[in-house]
Amino acid sequence: MCGIIGYIGTKKAAPILINGLLRLEYRGYDSAGIATIEKNGLSVMKDKGRVKNLYNLDGIDDLEGTIGIAHTRWATHGKPSKENAHPHLDNSNSFAVVHNGIIENYNDLRNFLVKNGYTFRSQTDTEVIPNLIHYYYSKDKVDDKNKVLRAVQHACKDLKGSFAIQVITKYLPDNLIVVRKDSPLVIGKGDGENYISSDIPAILSFTKDFYLLDNYEIAVLSRDQVVFYDFDLNKINKKVTSIDWNATSADKDGYEDYMLKEIYEQPNAIRETIGSRIPENEPCNFEDLSFTKEFLFSINKIYIVACGTAMHAGLSGKCAIEHLCNIPVIVDVASEFRYRNPIIDKNTLCIYLSQSGETADTIAALKLAKSKGATTLAISNVIGSSITREADYSIFTHAGPEIAVASTKAYTSQVVLLNILAIYFAEVLGSAPVEEIKDLKNEILALPEKIESALKTSSQMKEYAKSIYQEKDMFFLGRGIDYNTALEGSLKLKEISYIHSEAYAAGELKHGPIALIESGITVISILTDEKLVEKTISNIQEVITRGAKTLVITNKELPSNNIDVIINVPDTCTLLSPILSIVPLQLLAYYISKEKGLDVDKPRNLAKSVTVE
Ligand code: F6R
Image (cartoon, rainbow, N blue to C red; front, side, top):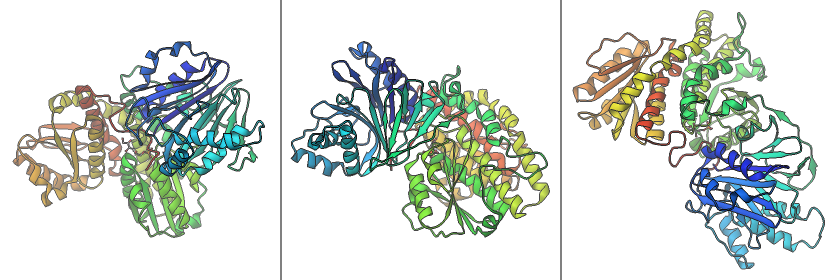
């Protein structure tokens, strides 16, 4: 959840670190800090609040050190405060550490250290790490160049939970050490300098060449090289991965907020997702997927497992796979899946959807399925992300970096990719009519332009937002595939506008929730499924009769039927309609948040990448 940045080179580290933190702020933003190696030893500067507060700290401009580590925090243990902000020092001020993750046994370790004379200045789990390193360093009687490395290794072997840590010390003034277990960490390779980050976009403007650290790997960085070790300190080789993302795509490009930029990037993001996967007059093509025909025929059940918005994309994936392939699909929330005993075997395909590829629950759910013999497929937006390294197979949405906490383009590109995947399966299995597949492919190829049209609802949604931004509760209704859009529209609204909302399958309304409908309440309905339009219209009439104000998103010609506002999006086939009908709802959530003067990109209590349970 937190973001970490490191630099080792010949330039002043502080500005590079703060700049990197600003790009990582979406991962956590309740406090921030940096540590550098200065001529007179370690310097640590930190404060509560946003990263930009670091610019106001006394002496920050005087830092000359060319090696440093930095952190932006999303509190887990201990409230947001200066004391709890990272970096943390050991009692002798010799080791500075930043950490992303959770140390589950920190209480035991803290008690152990207290018994050995150590004291603690913060309430964090992290503070045990520099003290443990110091403990092992001072116990080690061999005084060679690997003494610090051994101390870091011993300390990390004691840690239970997840961690990506960076360590600098006065004992190794020309090195920086990093270790990783179940928390993301990449090393950017420069020329005479190296960078560390929780994720790629934050350092994309410095390098496109990355080392992707795996679990239980340790790296010792100097200016000119990176030496890698396994957890037993055997040297290992790692390959450089080149990333072709454009650095400017991680900037705001003139938009007021990343979220708005990302909403408007959807046509291009989807072009990239489609890529060369739908060749003319040929079956869909997944070069990166080597499923055998026998395996595809042997699948008896598919699980799609994810969290939040990605799970909503999974619901539309289920519609596509069940309809085209006639294989039952169960969509499950990763945090539930991992703790039940899912019925899976070698004929089950488990698909894991994760924009970041770092979501702890989704990764744990994948490991569980693997241990039960299922075949696992990860769908992520981030090449080299943890989930893609765990899965048997991986495919990528290629939507480009998504920075805003509220997911938009990653969602639509996931729905597109799941539809292409369903077509790919159906073509191998021969399970869907050729004409239907042909139409679906044409409709997918037409999506980028249709999203451009859906984006033209922007001014209507901005106006509508002005009329409802002060509401306290709202309802979203839909049937069939439109229910998925209702769920996602409701989630977008909640997370960035803090307005309470509920999404219901429209037919469920009369089984309880209708008791909440009273005069003046806003009910937003989505109507795109031809077969179900009339049914949902009846449900809308039920709420109108009880005094609700109504907004309908549709791709059909509807009689006004006393509906207050009708927003039209381009028509497409039912399976793809969530990709277009969500666009006005993304814009609505955005404009309501702006009307309320909220921080759209960094909503309270949320973090972009949920790398803890
Ligand atoms: C909502 C949102 C979250 C994520 C969820 C999973 O806008 O972004 O609900 O979808 O935390 O994240 P990933 O896809 O990175 O696994």
